[in-house]
Structures are given as structure tokens and as C-alpha cells.
Image (cartoon, rainbow, N blue to C red; front, top):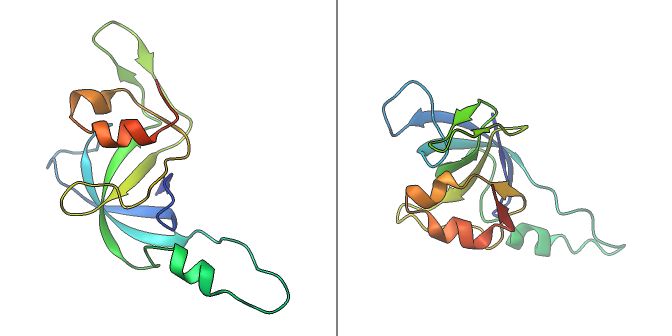
Length: 129
């Protein structure tokens, strides 16, 4: 289970396949995920009007999508000797062409994305470590 940190509409996703064909995914790896929980945008005022919430979600529960891992809880040794470890496992949903589905990334991402040419995700993120 990974947190989805973009505004595509997914909150929690489950990894079903790693496209690296290795045992586990690292930061910058492309994986296939299933959306387990949708992000709720909150209830609107008295009159319903929940159509805005439905339009804002670009993905639904049960959708199968590609994603990029941007944070891992497993320690990662970098070439300069620093060890990076995050509090959770997180990803950003992308389409088949490799473009992010969401337009905003909420949270810190690993700087290993630069080495794997995911600069579009780095430019959307507020900070990378």
C-alpha cells in the first residue's frame, strides 16, 4: 500500500506489479497500481452540488494505473554516503506516456528522480531531498 501524493483523486493505492522485474521498487521505479481509496474533497453546502467533486477526481476506485515511486520507508544509501529514509511509501500516478495525471504534488520527493529523468515530477513537487 502506498500513499498517492498528487491531486489525481486517489488517496491510497496498492502495487500489483513492478516494471523493473526485481523484488522491490525503489525511488524512481515505474510500477502498476490499483486505486484502493479515493480522495474525498469534502461535502459541499446545503444543496448537494457534488458534481464538482466528481469532476475533480481523475481516477476512481478500482482503476489500474501506472505510477512512479517517489518515497520509500526502506533506507537508501546514496553515492555520497548519505542514507535517506522517509516516513511512508508514496507514489505519483502517471499515464502511459509518462506524464503525471495530477497537476500538483503534495509533499517531499526523493532526489533520485533526477537521475532517472523524471524531471516533470520534480518540477511539480514543492521540495526534493
